[in-house]
Structure formats: C-alpha cells, structure tokens
Image 1 (spheres, rainbow, N blue to C red):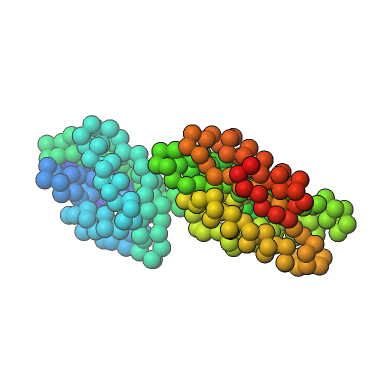
Image 2: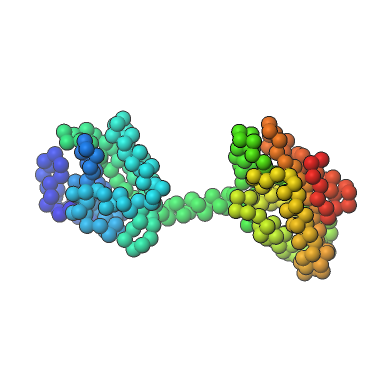
Length: 304
C-alpha cells in the first residue's frame, strides 16, 4: 500500500522510518478483513515478501481473491477452514500452505494471525513468512531418518511404522497383506572371500532387484546386515509367493561380479491374519525364512 495510506481504525500515517523498516522485513505483515458476507481484502500489506506474489498490493486491498487463487488446490480448503474456525471461536490462525509465486515456483508459507471483531466484520493482524528452505531441510532429515544409508531402501524404523499402518487397515477392513522376509545365503563367506566393498555392492544390487519388482504402494526395507523385508499391501499369500519366486530366480541368475549363481537368497512369507500383531506377523515370516534355510537355501517357504 502507499506509504501515506491510513490503516483501518483511523490510525495516523506511520513515521517514515517505520515504513522503511516494515518494507525490509523478510516476509509479509498484514491485516486481513472479512465482511459478514464473506468477502475478504487486505487493508494493509507490508514487507519484502509482497513483491514475490506478483500481484499488485493495491488490488489485494480491494479483494483477497487473487492471492487465494494462488494457493495449492489441496491447501485451499484447509486454509479456508482455519479462517472460519478462527472467526467463529476468535482463536489465532497457525498454519502453513503452499503458494504459487510470480516466478512460477511454489513456496511454503507459514501464517500466524490474531483475529479481532470490528464493526464491519473480522479483522486479522498477522505475518506470513516463506519457510520453503526449512521444509526442504525437514524433508531431507525425514528421509535420512527413514532410509538405509547403503541401499537407499527404507530402514527398520520406517518398516515398523508402515507395518503398524497396514496391519491396522487389514484388521479394520479385512484387506489382504503379506510380508516377505529375505536373507542372503552364506553372505559371510562373500565378505570373507571378496571383501566388504564387494559385499556392499552385492547388498546394493539385491536392494535394486527388490525395488524394481515392487509396485508403488509396496515397501522394501533393509532390516540390517544381509536381511531384507518386503511389505505388500492388498496382496494375498499366493500372489506374494509368485513374486518371491521371480525375485529369488532373478537374483540367482544375476552376475554380481563373482560369477552367476554365486549369490542366492532364502525367502519366507507370511500373510496377515485378522488380529495379528506386528510381532506375530514378523515372527511367522521369520519362521518361514529359517525353514527355507534349513531345507537347503535358495528357495521360498510360505506360512510355516
């Protein structure tokens, strides 16, 4: 807004040094007004962030719709619901959303605003700050906490989290769910004979084979050492067995750089039964895996 505009309520124009300060702030400070008929506008906008919207702030002083139309389509109803709750209960808005910026990029915006009732409706005083870098860093740290460093697969923590989610769905809706436990045969001898770098290469390639054979909704995880788990939602035991056989054969026929047929895996399968806990399902899959080991390795065992 122009520097000599008067804010709602009849306040006197701000001193020049305050105007200069607010225009340099790394974000946006604002007033948002909502009339009883639901129409909204920004009586006041200041801060360097106003330039990133690519929308003339004078237009927003008349109508807030242009900036609302820049919201990510999944965030729009959530923000509008937050505004409605804030207006009804006179509680602060504390949320974040994605906003399409002028340069064609999308930014994450954190919003904090305090409502107050005025004669003409509801007036919020608030601040918006671009937190895109923070969100990217949070996502990176989350990936690190959920990912096995060597193979890039999910780690044990992530597997247990997904197991809880999928078991809950299976128990509620009687949906099929299968768990595959996979272990490399005689892996210690690979490290002893070829060295740990070669062993790491073998683990990476086995992980790649697992990943390549799964659907988007499936999850492959490294549990530690040479043991892997594959979680298959909406998959019955018979279909899981077919996939396991293809995976076992693919690994056995692959040349890992030490000759074809030198690397094999044993696989155990268990299908979730209504009422199974996470520990019960894992134990049954583990029992099947070690039954495959006892029977000579390089094979798939189901439902021991």
